[in-house]
Length: 199
Image (cartoon, rainbow, N blue to C red; front, side):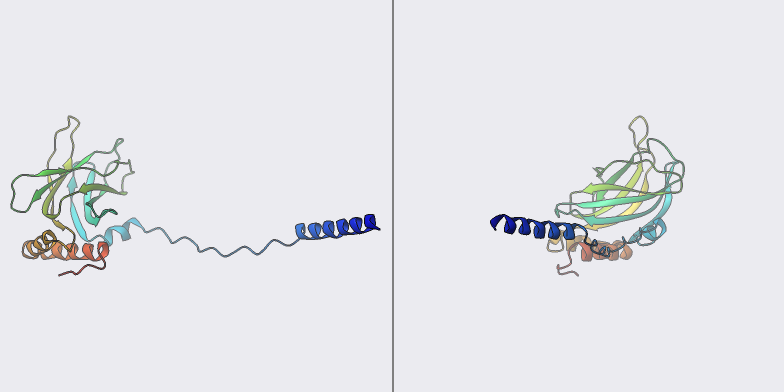
Protein backbone atom coordinates (compact mmCIF):
# COMPACT_ATOMS: atom_id res chain seq x y z
CA UNK A 1 0.00 0.00 0.00
CA UNK A 2 2.82 2.37 0.94
CA UNK A 3 4.53 1.67 -2.43
CA UNK A 4 1.32 2.54 -4.26
CA UNK A 5 1.04 5.89 -2.42
CA UNK A 6 4.65 6.78 -3.11
CA UNK A 7 4.30 5.80 -6.78
CA UNK A 8 1.05 7.79 -7.06
CA UNK A 9 2.64 10.85 -5.41
CA UNK A 10 5.59 10.58 -7.76
CA UNK A 11 3.27 10.53 -10.76
CA UNK A 12 1.42 13.64 -9.52
CA UNK A 13 4.72 15.43 -8.89
CA UNK A 14 6.01 14.52 -12.35
CA UNK A 15 2.77 15.73 -13.91
CA UNK A 16 3.03 19.06 -12.07
CA UNK A 17 6.66 19.54 -13.09
CA UNK A 18 5.87 18.56 -16.65
CA UNK A 19 2.91 20.96 -16.79
CA UNK A 20 5.02 23.76 -15.33
CA UNK A 21 7.66 23.31 -18.02
CA UNK A 22 5.06 23.42 -20.81
CA UNK A 23 3.46 26.67 -19.68
CA UNK A 24 3.28 29.54 -22.12
CA UNK A 25 6.00 32.09 -21.38
CA UNK A 26 4.68 35.27 -19.76
CA UNK A 27 4.02 38.09 -22.21
CA UNK A 28 7.01 40.34 -22.75
CA UNK A 29 6.80 43.43 -20.61
CA UNK A 30 6.66 46.65 -22.52
CA UNK A 31 9.89 48.55 -22.14
CA UNK A 32 10.13 52.25 -22.59
CA UNK A 33 11.83 53.05 -25.86
CA UNK A 34 14.97 55.10 -25.40
CA UNK A 35 14.64 58.83 -25.87
CA UNK A 36 15.84 59.97 -29.28
CA UNK A 37 19.39 61.27 -29.28
CA UNK A 38 19.60 65.03 -29.35
CA UNK A 39 20.88 66.29 -32.67
CA UNK A 40 24.03 68.40 -32.81
CA UNK A 41 22.03 71.32 -34.19
CA UNK A 42 19.58 71.15 -31.28
CA UNK A 43 22.46 70.83 -28.80
CA UNK A 44 24.16 73.94 -30.20
CA UNK A 45 20.86 75.87 -30.31
CA UNK A 46 20.29 75.07 -26.61
CA UNK A 47 23.67 76.42 -25.51
CA UNK A 48 23.44 79.38 -23.11
CA UNK A 49 26.40 81.17 -24.76
CA UNK A 50 26.87 81.24 -28.54
CA UNK A 51 30.18 82.02 -30.21
CA UNK A 52 31.33 82.28 -33.79
CA UNK A 53 34.98 82.47 -34.70
CA UNK A 54 37.99 80.45 -35.77
CA UNK A 55 39.86 78.36 -33.26
CA UNK A 56 43.02 77.66 -35.22
CA UNK A 57 42.78 76.30 -38.75
CA UNK A 58 40.84 73.13 -37.97
CA UNK A 59 38.08 74.19 -35.55
CA UNK A 60 35.41 76.87 -35.40
CA UNK A 61 33.90 77.95 -32.08
CA UNK A 62 30.14 77.60 -31.73
CA UNK A 63 29.40 77.96 -28.02
CA UNK A 64 30.15 77.65 -24.37
CA UNK A 65 28.42 76.14 -21.35
CA UNK A 66 29.13 76.12 -17.62
CA UNK A 67 27.87 73.72 -14.95
CA UNK A 68 28.82 72.81 -11.41
CA UNK A 69 30.70 69.55 -10.92
CA UNK A 70 28.78 66.80 -9.10
CA UNK A 71 30.78 67.40 -5.89
CA UNK A 72 30.02 71.16 -6.08
CA UNK A 73 33.75 71.93 -5.66
CA UNK A 74 34.26 73.35 -9.12
CA UNK A 75 32.68 74.18 -12.46
CA UNK A 76 33.02 72.49 -15.81
CA UNK A 77 33.45 75.01 -18.61
CA UNK A 78 32.76 73.26 -21.92
CA UNK A 79 33.94 74.72 -25.21
CA UNK A 80 31.89 73.61 -28.24
CA UNK A 81 33.56 73.78 -31.64
CA UNK A 82 32.85 72.48 -35.12
CA UNK A 83 35.52 70.45 -36.88
CA UNK A 84 36.56 72.18 -40.12
CA UNK A 85 39.36 69.76 -41.04
CA UNK A 86 39.77 66.37 -39.39
CA UNK A 87 43.09 65.99 -37.59
CA UNK A 88 44.34 62.88 -35.82
CA UNK A 89 45.25 63.59 -33.11
CA UNK A 90 42.83 66.49 -32.74
CA UNK A 91 44.41 69.85 -31.90
CA UNK A 92 44.59 70.51 -28.17
CA UNK A 93 42.65 73.53 -26.96
CA UNK A 94 43.83 75.72 -24.09
CA UNK A 95 41.73 78.08 -21.95
CA UNK A 96 43.04 80.99 -19.89
CA UNK A 97 40.99 82.83 -17.29
CA UNK A 98 41.53 86.44 -16.22
CA UNK A 99 39.87 87.15 -12.86
CA UNK A 100 37.88 90.37 -12.57
CA UNK A 101 40.25 93.31 -12.01
CA UNK A 102 43.44 91.34 -12.80
CA UNK A 103 45.90 91.47 -15.70
CA UNK A 104 47.25 88.03 -14.75
CA UNK A 105 45.65 84.90 -16.13
CA UNK A 106 45.68 81.33 -14.92
CA UNK A 107 45.37 78.16 -16.99
CA UNK A 108 42.08 76.28 -16.78
CA UNK A 109 43.07 72.60 -17.18
CA UNK A 110 41.24 70.26 -19.56
CA UNK A 111 38.84 67.84 -17.89
CA UNK A 112 39.06 64.95 -20.33
CA UNK A 113 40.57 63.81 -23.61
CA UNK A 114 40.50 65.39 -27.07
CA UNK A 115 38.72 62.74 -29.17
CA UNK A 116 39.04 62.79 -32.95
CA UNK A 117 35.96 63.74 -34.96
CA UNK A 118 35.07 63.99 -38.63
CA UNK A 119 34.74 67.29 -40.43
CA UNK A 120 31.37 68.94 -39.81
CA UNK A 121 30.89 67.38 -36.36
CA UNK A 122 30.59 69.41 -33.16
CA UNK A 123 33.05 68.46 -30.43
CA UNK A 124 32.82 69.24 -26.71
CA UNK A 125 35.98 70.06 -24.79
CA UNK A 126 35.48 70.37 -21.01
CA UNK A 127 37.77 72.35 -18.70
CA UNK A 128 37.75 72.36 -14.91
CA UNK A 129 37.51 75.72 -13.12
CA UNK A 130 38.03 75.47 -9.37
CA UNK A 131 37.72 79.15 -8.38
CA UNK A 132 34.55 81.15 -7.86
CA UNK A 133 34.12 84.62 -9.32
CA UNK A 134 33.88 86.44 -12.64
CA UNK A 135 36.43 85.52 -15.30
CA UNK A 136 37.23 86.73 -18.79
CA UNK A 137 38.11 83.61 -20.81
CA UNK A 138 40.34 83.16 -23.83
CA UNK A 139 40.94 79.99 -25.85
CA UNK A 140 43.42 78.89 -28.47
CA UNK A 141 45.24 75.92 -29.94
CA UNK A 142 48.47 74.54 -28.51
CA UNK A 143 51.18 74.46 -31.18
CA UNK A 144 53.32 71.38 -31.85
CA UNK A 145 56.15 72.93 -29.82
CA UNK A 146 53.82 73.45 -26.84
CA UNK A 147 53.46 77.21 -27.32
CA UNK A 148 50.14 79.04 -27.26
CA UNK A 149 48.79 80.15 -30.59
CA UNK A 150 46.54 83.15 -31.24
CA UNK A 151 43.80 83.66 -28.64
CA UNK A 152 40.08 83.93 -29.25
CA UNK A 153 38.03 85.73 -26.61
CA UNK A 154 35.27 83.59 -25.09
CA UNK A 155 34.07 86.50 -22.96
CA UNK A 156 32.98 86.77 -19.36
CA UNK A 157 31.52 84.00 -17.24
CA UNK A 158 30.56 83.96 -13.58
CA UNK A 159 30.58 80.97 -11.27
CA UNK A 160 29.98 80.37 -7.59
CA UNK A 161 27.71 78.88 -4.99
CA UNK A 162 24.67 81.20 -4.70
CA UNK A 163 24.98 81.01 -0.89
CA UNK A 164 28.34 82.82 -1.02
CA UNK A 165 29.43 86.44 -1.36
CA UNK A 166 31.61 85.54 -4.39
CA UNK A 167 28.58 84.49 -6.40
CA UNK A 168 26.66 87.72 -5.79
CA UNK A 169 29.72 89.89 -6.48
CA UNK A 170 30.34 88.07 -9.77
CA UNK A 171 26.68 88.32 -10.76
CA UNK A 172 26.52 92.09 -10.04
CA UNK A 173 29.72 92.60 -12.03
CA UNK A 174 28.32 90.69 -15.02
CA UNK A 175 25.10 92.70 -14.90
CA UNK A 176 27.21 95.81 -15.54
CA UNK A 177 29.74 94.22 -17.93
CA UNK A 178 27.49 91.99 -20.04
CA UNK A 179 23.83 91.50 -19.24
CA UNK A 180 23.52 88.41 -21.48
CA UNK A 181 26.34 86.70 -19.58
CA UNK A 182 24.71 87.63 -16.26
CA UNK A 183 21.54 85.92 -17.48
CA UNK A 184 23.55 82.83 -18.51
CA UNK A 185 25.10 82.76 -15.01
CA UNK A 186 21.66 82.98 -13.41
CA UNK A 187 20.27 80.17 -15.57
CA UNK A 188 23.27 77.98 -14.78
CA UNK A 189 22.74 78.54 -11.06
CA UNK A 190 19.03 77.66 -11.38
CA UNK A 191 19.97 74.31 -12.91
CA UNK A 192 22.83 73.49 -10.54
CA UNK A 193 21.41 74.89 -7.28
CA UNK A 194 17.61 74.52 -7.62
CA UNK A 195 16.93 75.33 -3.94
CA UNK A 196 19.23 78.35 -3.66
CA UNK A 197 18.04 81.90 -3.19
CA UNK A 198 18.97 83.71 -6.39
CA UNK A 199 19.13 87.42 -7.21
